[in-house]
Length: 191
Ligand SMILES: CC(C)(COP(=O)(O)OP(=O)(O)OC[C@H]1O[C@@H](n2cnc3c(N)ncnc32)[C@H](O)[C@@H]1OP(=O)(O)O)[C@@H](O)C(=O)NCCC(=O)NCCS
Image (tube, rainbow, N blue to C red; front, side):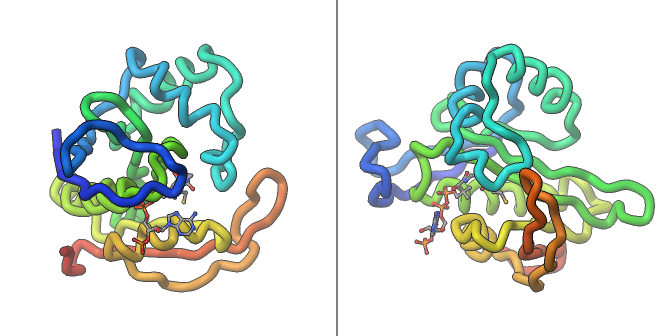
């Protein structure tokens, strides 16, 4: 399990990530069915799903099916945890064949925890690990809606390079969207 200390930052939502210490620790670990209650916190939140391809989950059963069918068999899916409790998730989806030199990064975080630098730290942790875990990977990429400025900033702070805008690239909830493409190469320097 990877761990990193997250400096506390002023909270945009007026909530606290808890604890009396100056630092809070996040870690990445596998997510399983016993995490369903924590998973449902972000999976049912409309603020979280705004730029995601999926709608907020409406039942625990739907969440259990997702964990069983998609998360557990996924080649690289990790819960972002505070203590041992998942507050979000981050994944790298592998390509195969002639595309196997690249993989796509995705992440979500419960809205109560936004604005504290947690997603940035999680992205940096993945960037440090994934090229070692998957030696065939040369490029980690991420596609972000042009209006999702928070996510774009996370990638910039995580050392990704903004490559450009792919116009009308993607259907999001029935509407074609312009997407910003970011990449990090295995040879890029990482702080
Ligand atoms: C996008 C998301 C992961 C950001 O997580 P986060 O932990 O709040 O991000 P961080 O705290 O690491 O923020 C990194 C930077 O982005 C900025 N930022 C974060 N959210 C922002 C927003 N909504 N608007 C403007 N800036 C924002 C922060 O201020 C920070 O910049 P700074 O250090 O220069 O001040 C989170 O909002 C989320 O889960 N959103 C829903 C799911 C999603 O959109 N996933 C990405 C799909 S591509």
